[in-house]
Length: 565
Ligand code: NAI
Image (tube, rainbow, N blue to C red):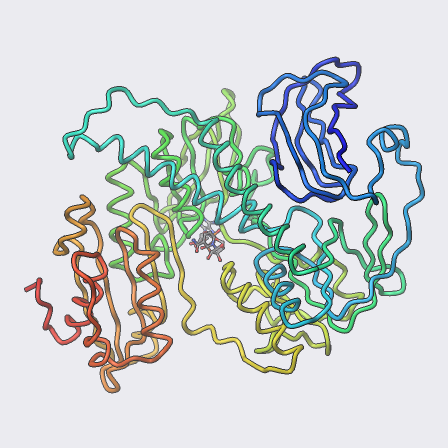
């Protein structure tokens, strides 16, 4: 049945409104209550939600279009179960929600890369799965983390390529940046991926409920949406409830306009100057992005080295690159307090070598880690125990909590807060539920860091190996000596490989430079399969590619590199 999408309501007595964010497009599957788009006016934004389950046939609006009350802006191929727009418009929310008990094998709370991957894996194995998510599917990674950051980083990389195009003899005249368009593109990428996950939920017949899961007085999990009050009968429960940005407990950190990664991903304009507290992964990625966009950027890092988890030589390349681009780095610098100044900018008090100095900037952002969402559901009512540090849910190698049939995965366990770890933990939990035990192994988790240049890291670092008194050998090859990197004008960085000196097994590696994060998978495979130097050296790498640097670094473990002396 074809039904029209009509602008039925505007804010207050408005007769017209402007289309803001559009979340759906032609061809998208849609459920009752899904947000389709927003209409903005001076009084704020109004969310327009679907009153139908079905597929969007047409949505003839673009962001910024002015629409009037009563205007038809699209159509939906609706399933008969929907409620008409008119009916919804006049119900004023008084209709009594329907009570529904869902009987499933696995109930998953949280739809991030931990929860949604577990849901798909479970459904693939024939389990009946329900997934509850209070925000949008995709969790922090898709909506407020990896994906939007990488979309911004890609735009910035286009900008930098244009600015340096003269080295290729290409002159492009004035370069103008439309920050609004850059951010709109980022939103488009996010929306496309979130839509893809919604589709996967449907394709696998996973019961997806958009609402907040809470524990009632009887200790039962319930979800109340506008239309339905859900209760569940389940055999296994997986908690995948994620994390949120942490705030330093320093004076002024509670000022209303202190930014975190979430705000940095949704800025309306580029700040003139920005001080980032924390020179970890998030801090350094945003430092490069906002510097390339034109902001003056300071990074204040408490430890003696930015990106402290990495080896010194890797951090050195990033520090040099940052400083060349004009990012000011303060290491061994402790953020002590934040104050507002009379002109609306901010002063950050920093202790360096026992002395207090102040850094003034228009904005201050915190990137000092993420805290597990331990309060988003009453864990104590379920009897779930926390780890020894009290900062995550305690789990065993199969992601089981202290209680049988209750699992926890992803950032809420605070083991390694990375999307790909959460997804893998989700698969391990489902496998355990199915009786196929496959324990989590955290030794070979790769990380991909999108600084400029980017970094891939896997297995043991040199500094960890030395801390454990391991006898190691290292092989290092600079991109400066790689033909392909030079043709691309990307000579910075190197490939470093670490092997156990006695067994000659490759145990770790880092790549810093062009396409490092993609090249990393080669090292991950070598390390995971415990390859020894001699076997790894037999692999033929295609010429001309940057991957030849991996081969050269392997050869350098025995000082046999061909293109390096
Ligand atoms: P982080 O733990 O990587 O870095 C936080 C930094 O803040 C540390 O270096 C710490 O020494 C510093 N710090 C703490 N207190 C300070 C103070 N008083 N003054 C100055 N500096 C202080 O945490 P981050 O960067 O917020 O990332 C959170 C999580 O998200 C991490 O687990 C990270 O691995 C993950 N993530 C990973 C990404 C990737 O792999 N590409 C991207 C974004 C996040």
